[in-house]
Image (cartoon, rainbow, N blue to C red; front, side):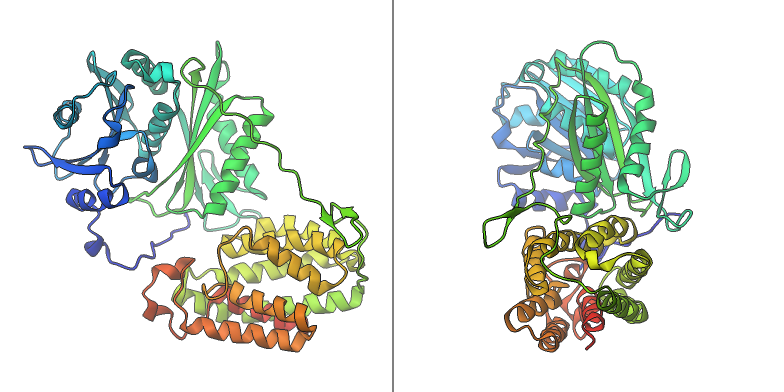
Length: 513
């Protein structure tokens, strides 16, 4: 069984009517003004980007199924034409070629039409027209990336492009991962090619996938670049996509494999499970050049008032922490969150995915388990170690934000002179990673007033009161971020933001208010 996520959209499918090709013909030109819709005698529509018709390289056209366009097809700046098949109307490569030629005097080196088919194959219809059939939206996206990032020499020759597509058809291997509803041996689990498997960190899932898919490419002759494309399926968050991309890159670099990486988002209409898929193809380097390695991130040192720079949370803290007091506060806060889980869940079922309560409860339990037996007088290093545990057990956007904040807090606790100053410094770091601010109906409506009040007044009771006011205010706010942003405003009225409410409960417990 896999995790099923229903789309939270403000309009019913019948209103959106995305399977109607005429719908796309009216919407897409609004997104890209250089695109215009053309209809031929057989009744099918094709969207043509007139700005790309003058290209001297091979033109790229995509043929998709109505309602199944991926983000890659819609966003790709190299695709000159998009056609949709619907109601039994077949769009041939020759149809696309004729419409392109009718719109402008095509001066390119030829046209290649990419489409989703039943199996991979490449056809050369004439000296200037080639067609590639892919087995899925994932493979179609991969082809579009490959064609768009190929060398200028390759893209200037229809014969080289056809050869490149032949390589893709013969060498590409794919793998698919779905997130599983149950845990395996106490850990989150996924369904992969080899069955259900648990994992402790994201990199373990990605590594298993890559090792499986790379078996087909154990021995490669000549100089090759690995074209790697991954698609998140049915809506992973931006942060989750960054994590997957980072782990893919890390694995390939650890194996000294030259690569070029790309990404898209696809919807699986037959299976609502969330997950991701990876497609890999080793390509001769004359057709594809590896991307440069990313620059290693250098942490910015934090300077104290004397100018001394401190780099890590392992430095001796300037704040003295009492083990018994810190432990009492943490236990009180976590116990309060665990007790409030049904209420948080109820709120989130009304305005979100319904998992916020479970996420915060599991995180609180993990914190209590982690601090048992730890020396909390060394709080900065303990918080730093705690983040690694929470990354596994706290999912969703809220879990990611907590981990980002605690990472920054661990460093700040080691360098700042007061706890309130450390909380403020960590907040400033968090705000670099999220667009959420006061009034966006998120956990920030509780966190920001609490920290700013505590920093300016030093009064914990007043800080909690300001946080309570912030949470109360979310009951009448229109959400601009998160899942609630997709709901009609009337659906969120009177219900506090679940993330803000859960954070308030934590702060009330830790503050003893």
